[in-house]
Length: 194
Image (cartoon, rainbow, N blue to C red; front, side):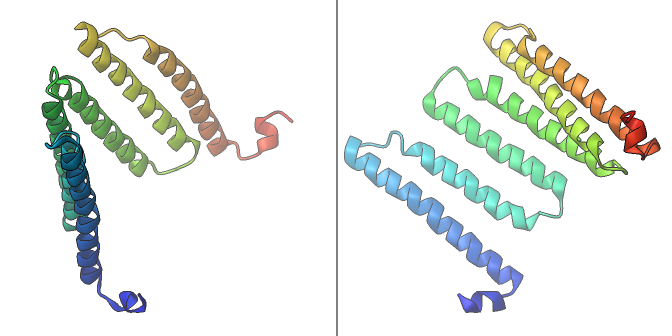
């Protein structure tokens, strides 16, 4: 192991990729063997194999395009969407991946990307970062509630997410107010009227 520190970054990446492949696919292979021995056919072992394959694809693409964030996010979204579609196909249900899982995944990716972009472009970071993250999480809850209700009832009915959003807005406004006031008034005694 002492020679590991002497390797170049590309050599370390190759070792990491090979070890990842060995661990992921040996676990999948063991699952397949156990499933075949117990059931005389492949049933549940298809799931760990597909998951290992998608994880390995994500491990391979990350170092190749880590500097191109948009490309990495798009490929990551596509690979996870493919995983969800494959799991849906294997369970042969009513296409929950296309109607529910992939829209939720898309909203999560867009929401997290937007929050990270807003926070990165913020010049003064403090309580406002927490407020932005909370507002983003609240909006994500609204979309999640809407997508789930549309999947279940065919209508967008917002229930629990309205309560979450109301609480988040109040707390976020309070945090933004404190952030703005502390920017102008640095004396905490005067701010809290002590």
